[in-house]
Length: 408
Image (cartoon, rainbow, N blue to C red; front, side):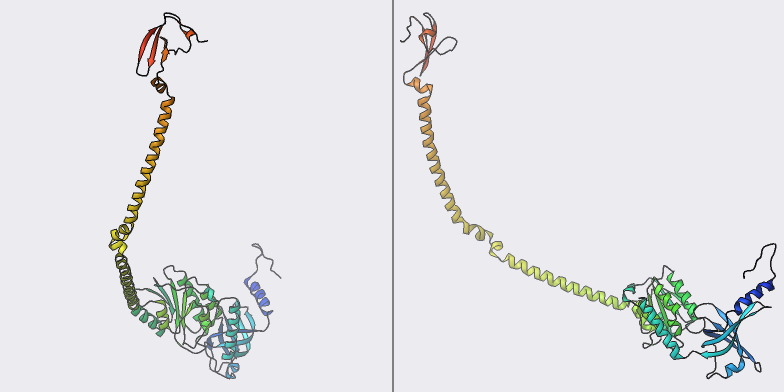
């Protein structure tokens, strides 16, 4: 039951400790798996002490057990070993501390560890963490490389030496961490997170030399694998020998067989790239030369064609006779057309002349007009004594009416 407390009605520390102990003791006996980080066995003492730690978190428990239990084990128990402990939690009322009292300790064998790794592999594969589509491409020339490795390790030496031989100017940010043992998992995870959050680092190498199955266990730990899977920065792993395949290799963007191979995959060889550029330039120059020679041959072939070498003979001469004949035909047609039109013009002129007043006048007729210019068509239109104008074919005359008579 929850304690009923208030600022005016607090409870002593001992009461709180008693209630904590009561709740903890209700847990009963449990099987716990962890890694032995500290083992204390005093000569002649009937009780041994060890610290059991979770490999994926900064959590540890104090465990006590009979000294005879350790002595009866098939293999000596040492710090760093993974064990399964059957224990019951105990709360020390006076000190306010928690410990576990164990009556059975069983080392976890290699077969069990491998079976657990295989089970984790199937779980992660079902989640799609190993899919090829998730793999990121490495930068062609990295601006800064992050390196997670053991301090002063052979892996660090191999990566740095080969990288600087290939491209001396590329900087590194090195995170030295334990790569086996008690603190390996948490340190590796923290180092990867620091490098992934650094915007100047555009590729990360996680490297470790060879070792036993137990030595490489941190690189199959779920926390490390999920951290690598969650990195936005491409990660290259080089763990153990080529035959070793920890789970982190499956989730990494690129798996290198060795630290030396990792350096070669991440850092381009400047000398080799310069050779490639020179070879590409040579091929481009040869191709351009061949293309120019080919086009020059085509131009020379076209200029040798009569159409371009002798354009007058090729274009004009074959058509000169036709042009002359066309000119003669045109002249003949024009002459015929002009003659025909001239004749038609003469005929039209004769008709116009015959029908015109001038033609009528030429035949002896005259046009009589009054002084106002009006044409006189009838004798009744004038009177005796009127002055008239008589228009002839050639000139005109003045006249005076002396008499007149209308034609019946």
